[in-house]
Length: 148
Image 1 (cartoon, helix red, strand yellow):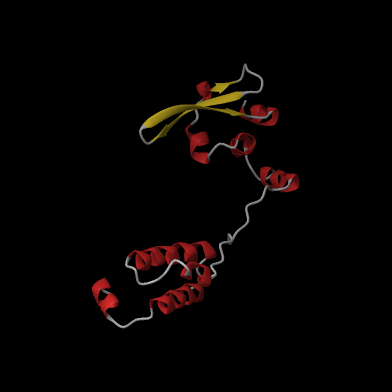
Image 2: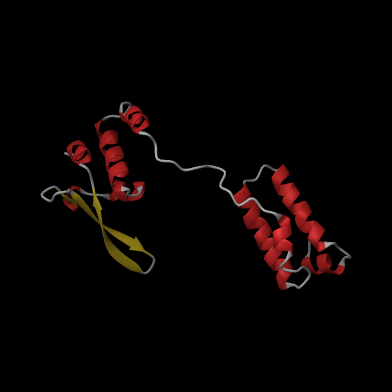
């Protein structure tokens, strides 16, 4: 709807926010998505001085994550490893022992691995917008053996 038309109509802006929240829930959106979208509309209506800041608490938004990250148990990691070839096993072990991102691991070259140091180090240059930085990752003996 055209914003100028929206503000000229005799609307209940607070009820519109509650209706929007109900519509997002009915669409099956996650709680984080609902909070983000309601927050954007809320800020817009607040900036146009048609609602008060107190309304935010009344909306009672569920700010919990839909999924829960967890550290996989040792047996689960072993099960994954048992289905991999040598390259996949080396990549997987490097990732889980160093915490590096997949993209960084895939860009890694053999000369960036310092096998002569204990623990073995992987030195990568990461490029962020406007800067470069040297990052060092450490890997376990098991990951080192798989890489060799």
